[in-house]
Length: 265
Length: 242
Image (cartoon, rainbow over all chains, first blue to last red; front, side, top):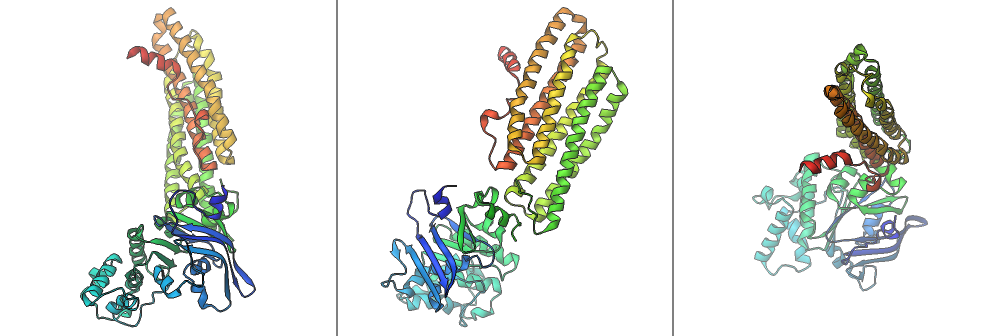
């Protein structure tokens, strides 16, 4: 395999949305990520797979500086969004997290109305000029998240009153509302039933191209279904990064092969 | 293909092992069918020929069982990478090997129609041809059992010998027909038998191509792939007919 395939840097033309170079992450003395370099593109959904503790979630959380919230976490190396170093002192972290949104494993709507869940971000970021404008953002975000039809008559109900799958789509709508460039999803379906999972997967498919999407998943079938690029992490290193079809039909690395065919461990 | 490391889910390994066993069995039965059909032809042994026809049902049944279990395994285990390639190869190989069995049956069915064996000189080339065709079948299935891409490529290279035999027999049969017009009917059957053996060789190369794919994840390089099923001589005849 070529070096570029192994390190995860894109070789094809077109500027990647986010680039990471030689990223190390430490939790205290323990190194969780070891020299990872990867590019994330606009036109493809990128899946991070690997066994528990391999560092895939840790790495995902570096991409919008969520690890800043953990006092003992230390990130070195370089991560850029559109060429800007996101760890530079000039970077506004609140702004960064609007540009690089995140959806978590467990749906976490605010204990507010459905409307306010979506309106919250645009309000604090000053994205809406008036009530009408805000209404439109709420509607279009819910539309894009495939939730509008189900909630349009109950926008004042509490977001927490929705089903798990609806809550997760509400969280995606909330991320979309601030017009992000990248959406990071950390196991977004692991708490959902298969139907709700399918709806999220369909949503990911529809959002592809509008946002750069990175999804961490334990479910390899899901990675195969939703992504065009797959990165396999093992013990804090990026073992293999390539086209999803290649990773799942003909992986280059034995470790990847053992993991995806269920021989790991 | 896979390194032999076991799956975490052991039942998956037992499905795969059962499939490998059945592929070995269908391969063995087809090889035996070719050998028996040829022995029946050489000795004009009608009982043995009838046995080949009868036993073809076993090959058909095996194909069905292989396809069912492959289908089931793909549905239930969601295989990936080399496992997926092996199962797809198994599915295709079972169909191809079943066809090889059909060709052997077809040869057996012609045994009662070829009675003047002592007069038909071209028949003397058939045993050697069938020996090589059968070796190709055996080697292609050995290559599958051993995940041996090298042996698979060699099978494809050796198919040329079977094609060359066919061309020689074709010429010899035509000459015989010209010289002995009253033997034309029986000689035509001989020609069909040679054609069946030639097709068996081609099908062995199809198996070899699937083995190569399963083992490496790549299609077999074009230059070593089997020749087009129609031989050069057939091409020449077709050209004239156009």
